[in-house]
Length: 348
Image (tube, rainbow, N blue to C red; front, side, top):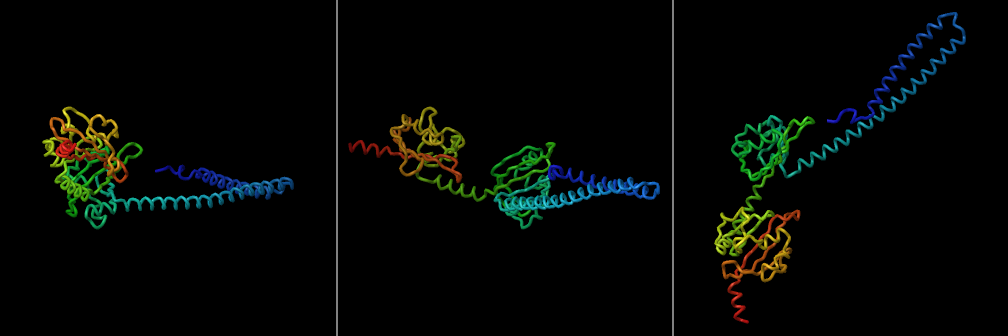
């Protein structure tokens, strides 16, 4: 929290005005007492009486000016405080609207692990009706925390280390709802570096994983051989038709960078690798013919012979982007055109 003098820089002047007002008031009272005493002294001449009256007038004038300045400052200060209060309320309202409408579930957890806040999205993910169903629960003591393997991550976050973990199969302790979640933990620390709370951001990826699984089944059963690699050139999908064409089984290639083994005797970039690296032009010497795809934006077609085989292949590779236009994968399809190439030669 900001210090008071940072929030209201004029508070120092206010204190000074208060001190000045009190001091002048005390001086007026003292002077009045002195004048009264002087007036009772019959030996006091006219000149001293006039001087006393003038002193009272001067000090009273200064006191009046100070009082007016103080009153004006009070008015300005009240207006400033009211404006700051409105701005703070507007800011808090905006932040609340953002949190309440975020698709991410949010939990604010104390340093002891007790849930102190649960966003509306989190209540939906957990399958509960009200925030009270979650408030007060200790995330470290929930059976679901240990069953899902989250205990170590939560302990890490409460110890001050952020974490990010995918594909957590979670069964809600309160509702029994089963979901697949992505967790991100952000420790919140005070000025001394001590953890005061843990912010948990939870994404329900159940539907996404279901679609991915169904899509994988479709691709896996496709009659066209194909494989998919991620931006790090690791194989993430190798369908059954690809197994039949190359003789390389899924379990032996998925998660590796060995896609080259299907075509070459030594490590060399495939068409999909070139798409990931943006070096399609470097493939001209590797294939009989490399050209941009007429059907797929950013895609390329190429022809070439499979090593240790008499198979002639037509390969097509294309980039895969997410909604933000970030490259997340490249897919390559393989067509065995050996018979077509032989027919073309016979027709020459």
